[in-house]
Amino acid sequence: MLDGLLYGAGDAVIGINPASDSLPAITALLQLIDGFRQQYEVPTQSCVLTHVTNTLRAIEKGAPVDLVFQSIGGTEAVNASFGVTAAILEEAMQAARGLARGTVGDNVMYFETGQGSALSANGHHGADQQTLEARAYGLARRYQPLLVNTVVGFIGPEYLYDGKQIIRAGLEDHFCGKLLGLPMGCDICYTNHAEADQDDMDTLLTLLGVAGINFIIGVPGADDIMLNYQSTSFHDALYLRRVLNRRRAPEFEEWLERMGIADYRGELIAQTEQQPLLALAGLEDTRRG
View 1 (cartoon, rainbow, N blue to C red):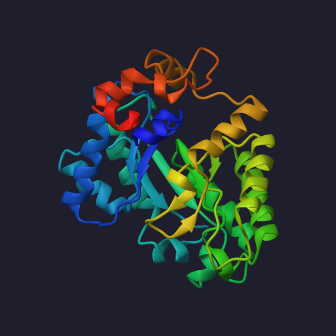
View 2: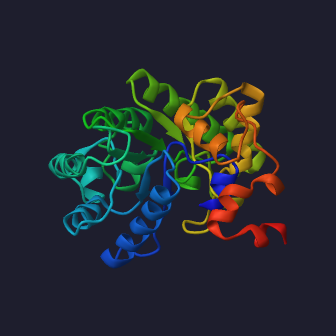
């Protein structure tokens, strides 16, 4: 989390893929992020990417939930395979709104999608995966989400064979999400089983940046050790910002400047000079080392 913030990442959400779905573990992670966020007044949202029913239980227990996460698909059958219904999503949205947390108002949902999920669940009814992906976006729109994220390459060799197909699918998803008026983002990624590499991801990253992607996912070193796939890193986002002059959310940029992480242009200050946040976190000696 600190690593990401020092690279100027995190204006959309700070999220954790939990290794356990136990309620105590989820609550502890939510409290960890929220404690950090509140202590340093970070203008962002936190999220633990667990099943929606677990998040509902956490809310009932008083956990600090900013965003409710859930994977969704484009048919009732695939959503049943995920263990969700429209009614459950509605209940979760209302519960999160009732907490009245953060800076996002009524936009408290965070959805993840991906081409091929309906085929994997045998819930496609003969329809093609892009049509069903667009239907998933229609479902997402019903709940006024803050974030909709296509994990375009995570399906890997099942339905996306190589880098060219992943690039095609990523651009398709971005286009359909934008057409439906969604805050569309992408986890630009691939599995190690696909005929793809990081050069393909750099290409898709650049193309999506030119196309006006709302957000991208960043993980340390571009390596998602929880789900075993390759994504994009915090410094990949820096490249895209510099070549395309893409700025962060204004409140987040103001916070970065106030904390001495970035200057008024949004450019990072050398990490050896990023003392305020490092000192607060008690890591200044570690960073020097």
